[in-house]
Image (cartoon, rainbow, N blue to C red; front, side, top):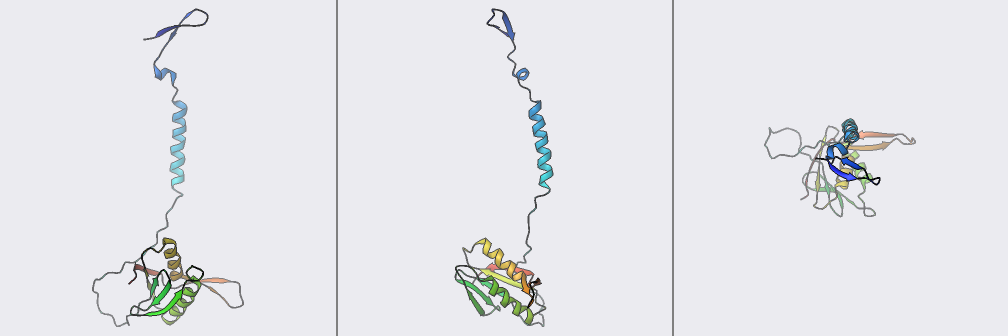
Length: 169
């Protein structure tokens, strides 16, 4: 029901108080439509990188004739250790409170030269090791950058692409 108000000139003016006649929702709907289209288009360009890992199992398989040699990189708070599945072969202490990734790459290159058919490695971590350190070490175990002598050319060499992770003993 319209109410009557008096204007400054003394005339009675009818004013409709229905809110839908006052609000114009068309511009807001236009903005929301454009926003939805924009978000749908840009959602295609976002991607997540997924690293494939193999999880070790206790399932018994057929016995193989190959020697049981495992490459284990143990990440400790004090540094890195390289083990063969039974004993620690080498220890790499931290350098300036950072893991020595270059020395790890050199040692893994030597192991790859000794066992060229070996494709898998295990990374074992102590609790409270930062995720960034894990990814950095996984990258070093997967690939190594090799520089040819007398050349500035850097070549990437695949070391152990199949990586398993677990808790350090």
